[in-house]
Image 1 (tube, helix red, strand yellow):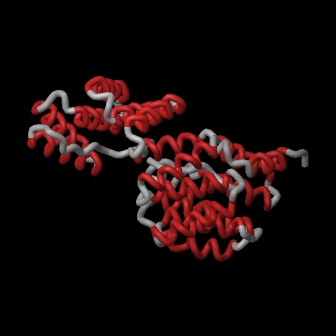
Image 2 (cartoon, rainbow, N blue to C red; image 1 turned 30 degrees about the vertical axis):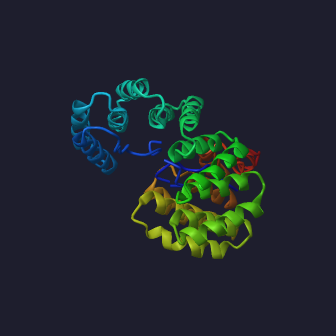
Length: 324
């Protein structure tokens, strides 16, 4: 059983890979510009990354006073507005940046982020691809293109992009996670496992990596070992990460036919993140295991809405809907 990659935050897993949560939070630049403009843009990008939008806006706007043709600063100003939810204004800034210099990858990528936010997946892919035509080594666009392909089920295309990401940016964990996930969805589990072995040698006990290691153990039927890998992650300060760990613990308990234990673990996940799809699925599956078809139907229908690509939901939902 597999579920879609998440965008960095985990938009962790990740990811990737990172929508609300995708892409860099700012563009630093040290080109041939007035030194003060470059410094203001850099510190503005840092403020943007930390979530201080007012400071970011002030610094970036000052950078643009020094040089109104400062492409990266226009992108960063657009990212400020994107973070605020002012999508039309963000688009205006991004389009201005692209008009000023279409030979930089960042304006194309930024317009892709905006399309992603608006749910325009194909448009996002097109703009990420344009960024890569300008600079094939621009890792944020590569990561986001791979994530988009994965999310729409183009697993081999996603695999190719994640594989390239591990080359252009080997320090980016999302590339290794996405490559393993894509290979798994293609039924190439031995290759997926090998990617995890190499990633673990490189990144050690990275939490998002450990989740995939636990899932690997689940595929092998080692539910108790999988829960042992996940248990330390349940105390993570990041509520989203803890929710993912509890969700997969619920799945490990389903594998041991421990319906009550699965429901308890799923409840822990849902207290941390209300619509965690794996926890919703696990709750429905556990209720069906207990024979409560009516309640299971409600939870499984919700799981299908949250994670349409989860192939495990459909047969259980059919069983819950079957005449008693």
